Structures are given as structure tokens and as C-alpha cells.
Length: 309
Image (cartoon, rainbow, N blue to C red; front, side, top):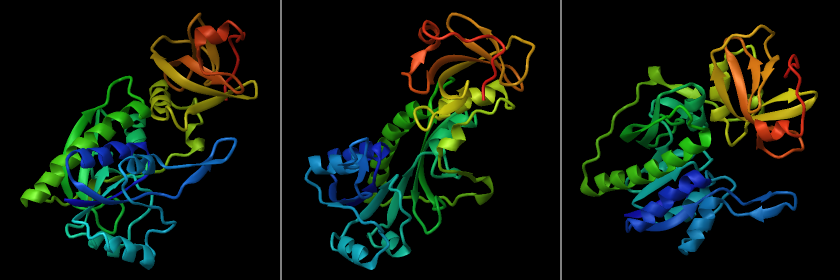
């Protein structure tokens, strides 16, 4: 099939490469404009653009994909289908209808649950036992189109937003190839979503990572995993930001206030929450490197009774 691919971050790269290796013709790649990054503000290509250039595929980077001139240019490619994976812009109806078979989206959740921009991380934060990929026929709504195919991916007790992201990227790539075969063979079956079961996964922000010790230890531990590696969970210690990369829920009971450090061992810092104790195992103090607590304590003294946050 002649495929017009639209995607931007790492999540989309595996899908693009799978389309190419499966023998489909990628007639063009649409991705977000390049942005300056890092201290030197050097312009950096999007991961999808880098992959497209490896295969000499034409790349389009419109500021607004809904512009008539952009759609006119893409129409010249005469794609059989549009494939979207974490593109980052809302597609207008004119573009959704342009390919012969419309556009499909590789979405990182089991729809209709977790529509929106942060489905992968919210599944971890909310303690879901399973996530997955849904390939849907796109419509004008946000992740509201008819579902075509699904695959489940279990969420482990140590899953992070990053590790689930990587698993789903691979699962999405594989499922998309199976779905393109359905289109080729003419046996696509579409299922409408039940809107009553939807749950919008809001976009991640740095503010989301601020730890509130009025929550339970289980809730905070999931927040830490869900926001690893970005934007990360954090609190403050003596006025400095303290990022928490790994923690464990401890059932043992301690007296103290919420947010109080109630015990310090050689490899953990115990913090009281609304329910249960959160044992911090890997942390990063402002201006310092990320390290396990045993390494941190060799150069920094923390007293019981210290309040975090």
C-alpha cells in the first residue's frame, strides 16, 4: 500500500520502520517542525524525521497541517491510507478523508479508555493491570473513531512510564502491519466506541509530578513510576527540589506527620503518607546526579523528623 505517515516522537519510529520493512511504500512523512534543544539551542530533528531521512523518504514539516496549501501538497502523493502515531496536531476532516482508505491511528491505550495525550503514563499512575494498543479509523474527534484492532500489554508491578512506552511502541508497530493486511484483503471490521467508558488522559506537565503526602503510599509509588523518565515525581528537601526515581511501599507503621521522614536505613528513606510508608530508594537532589539512596547517604546526612515538601 502507498502510505502517508504522520508521527513525531520515538513512539512513532518503530511503526514507521515496520511499515517500510513490510514492503509498503511510504510516499511521505509528516512530522512536527524541528526545534532548538539543549544549552546550545542547536536545532534537532524529530526522531521520525531522522528515520525517514535514513530511507530517503520525503519529509513535510508544516506548522499547521490544516492549511489548504499543505493538504493540496499531500494530496499529490495519492496515498492509499494515512497512518498516524503520536503526530502532535489535530487533523482536519479534509485530510482525514484524503487517502483512499482514510486515516488510521496507532493509539497507546485500550480504547475507549484513556483518550488523549498521556494514555501510557496515566495507565501506570492509575494502577491499571493492563494497557495496550488500539488501531482506530480516525474521525474529527479526539481518539473517538471506530476501533479496528487491539492488542493487550500487561503492566507489571515495577512498570514505569518509560518501559511501558517502549513495549507499546513495539506492539503498535506489529499490530499496524496486521491491520494494513486487513485493508489489503478487504476484511476490515470496525467497532464503535462506547463513549460512556471513556476517560480523558490529560497531557503531562511538570507540575503533575509534585508529590502530595496527603495521598497514600501506593498512589505516590505509582506516580513515581508513571512519570519516570518524564516529567518525574518530585518533592523538596530543605528548600531544594528532590526528584524521586524509585520507591517502595512499606506496610510497617510509624508515628509521625504526613511528609515526615520517620526512618533512615542504609538503603532507604522512609516517609509517612496518608496511608502507609513510602521508602525512597533512588533520588536526585537539585544540582546533584541521580543515585541510589545508599550512595546519596554517603555524602549527605538526613535526620529523622525532617519534613519533605
